[in-house]
Image (cartoon, rainbow, N blue to C red):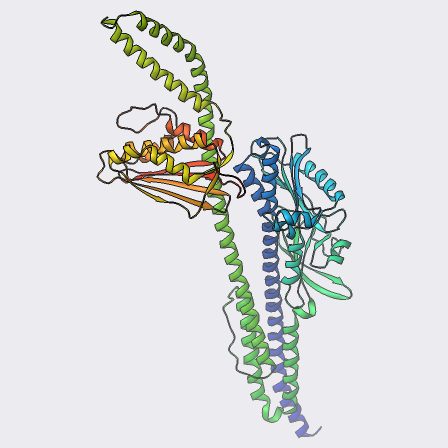
Length: 625
């Protein structure tokens, strides 16, 4: 062999061998880092899709449970129960049918669309709901009754296993809710999963595929109705995914292609979210790196005498930077970017790497934002539940006091009637100048006061069967203010009415609600006596066209914070001179509760008191009283 040839071979060996070694080491590091980054991205996407699927279904369960907390449909008449179910039905377009079941699991009322045109004439919103066949109604009734009977102890709702509807062959689940502390039937709805399926179809980027498996590992949703109807079994192709309890990774083959997959359990539903991508697509950046590396090595071998050192440095540094960037990305530093000003394959790989890092960082931010939003929703629902629990506890206390008051009133009525009758007879027999007449008059006056207290106790103890008629709230409030006009003028109270524009109608009994506002106005007048500032603000507001909010705010003495929890208790009063009976607010609470509304009180001592009433709004077609 010639010396020139040996020198060339030596130069090739010296130049190419280190370059080849550095390239292989960098390629392996990049492969490992890229594989870890892709796997982590898939895991995060799978967890996000699992959380979204859980929220899509469980939010309906929370809404059904909340509806039962606000109102017990089993105590409503047929018309109001149907109206209650219609409100629930119209909350979501994905609800196919909703039903109310008694304790024997029998369907007592239901809402579903079987004639779209007829329902659309009733309510345009019905047009957005799917048409249900008769066989599907029977299937829903059977599934809902069985699900309600299996609601675990201590839980308010349950979700059925996913199934295909009997006629339309569309994926759906039954969501059932039962009122806390009762076994008397409940509320159930069939939730269609087409919206969730469409979201899965739109969520996959590029070659990515996102789908859901049921608890047995069968395909549940992936955006393709044909595949969903086949319910392909993945339990053998993707071991570990069926019934998974935690996030994991796996591989499977389909139609001759190898897929990399990550899966995550869907909370509380027993489903599994899977994110998959073809192996060649997932490792495409690494393949690009491999091709560019070996291309550079070829050029190095051709121009080794002059370019070997330069090419070695030009290749080693960018590849090392790519490897370092991959390691940074694998360590969780999603903000890391590679600065590589090249226009060759290495530059393309660096830009692809930066784009991938930016996409991962954006997905991470969105996931954090979703978590914050979910935490805020949970906090809001917890606050609403806590307020409902306080209202329920107060109602239970008033009910117990009402039972005691009913017994007292029953036992006192007969003796009191005898005392009043005998005193009246004695007064009739005594001449006007008799000294005993004054004493008997005092006895008669106090006995009548006791009779008045007994009547108040009966109002507190008996559940009012009030007429539910549409009435003009503003007209009723004006009548109450006019009845107290002289007293308002005498005390020097300035009244500011801030009414909602137009007519405001509520369902209720005019006399009973007028008595409530009269009592509240009397309490406000009593609190503002001898106050330097005497202002009364009366506000009405329509909320969501279903509820009406009334606020009465005064500038009276206010109520100490430690007394606020007892303010609705019978015989409790904060008046400086107890001239009444201490029953007004308790009676108001009972009347408002009988109307299906709520009453709350906020007060700052020395500043004033605000009483808030929420009453059901009357339908727009009802006449005014």
